Amino acid sequence: KGCLAGSALMGLGMLVRYFGFQSEASPPTQYDLGPISDYPLRSRIAVPTAQAIIIHDSQGYSAISLICPHLGCVVNVTSDGFACPCHGSRYLTNGSLRNGPASHPLTILRVEVNAEGHLILYTDQV
Image (cartoon, rainbow, N blue to C red; front, side):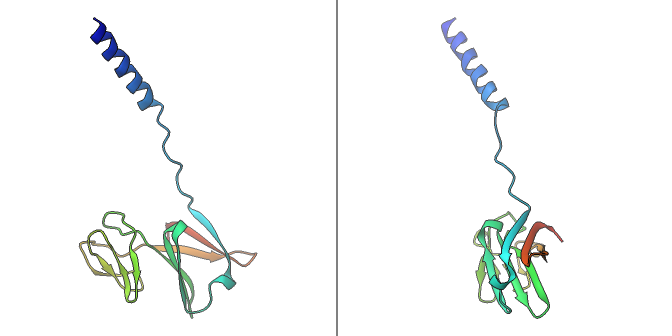
């Protein structure tokens, strides 16, 4: 009877822990990246907190997610684009897929300049 009671109490404790689980807070979907002067023309600046890269070229500002669409690994920035360290997918500098196993390009993210002249990155898709 003692073992049965002990097992019941342990099970009850596990059940309480299960229902009381607090998930991690969702990451923000908007990042204030500071003044646009921090992103000079012809720059490609990684933003680790947002897992994205900001590109400033003659056409303006753009952003690419550094999350591989295959299994969610963070890709490495290379001289000729991006490479996934988990399964070897490779992407061109514009985020398009060069070779798999991924079957989709990197996600293009929305970026805007606000009234204060700060670059705002939105991690939801364009």
